[in-house]
Image 1 (cartoon, rainbow, N blue to C red):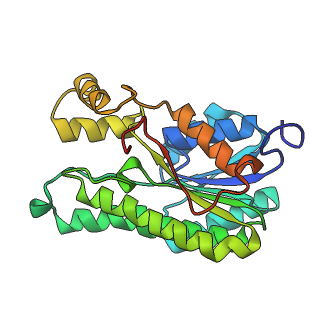
Image 2: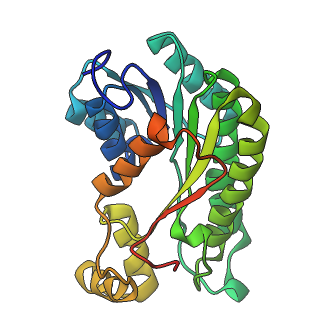
Length: 256
């Protein structure tokens, strides 16, 4: 569909954390709407599997550890080299870390979670915004935990709140070029990343932990990755042309 009809037709998109379920679902949705997509991830096998799963001429991939600035700069440069420009960046890479009460939280784990989620996101923003076309869109994947407090995951909650500050600062700085910057705040998503968090938090099996979390969500279920991807397409498209500096929650009412 690239170059023809589609809400993001002809736009070049970089997705960090592209090998995960949200990155992959977003890539698929963007390609279906006419975009060209570069997936960046440090998981070489997962990246190859994601690229193969998409099986499309308009997708490419690059290895990238978002905590290493040279690799982030290379991923942005590689996107521009491959597609001739960068119109949209989806800042999606992140880690959760093991749960622990704050009074016992290992400082090394706290620093690791902030390093990947906050510093890594800052580096992608820094280099993507240097290259992005005027009128482009940058989307930062935060979490419902960036809007509310949740026990035993202090590092993750702190990191995801920090991304809101990063987003709001970037939105103000980039407004003069018409570049929109918004953060996405998914609630629990039906994927391996979330299920691992739930099992660690509850000490239950995956199925039982999911039921416990479902009971906390007003809509009574987890989101599908494709539902998060639909929001990514919206924020990448002209349909959200007057939206910037916004925290976009898709959490089934969890933060309400």
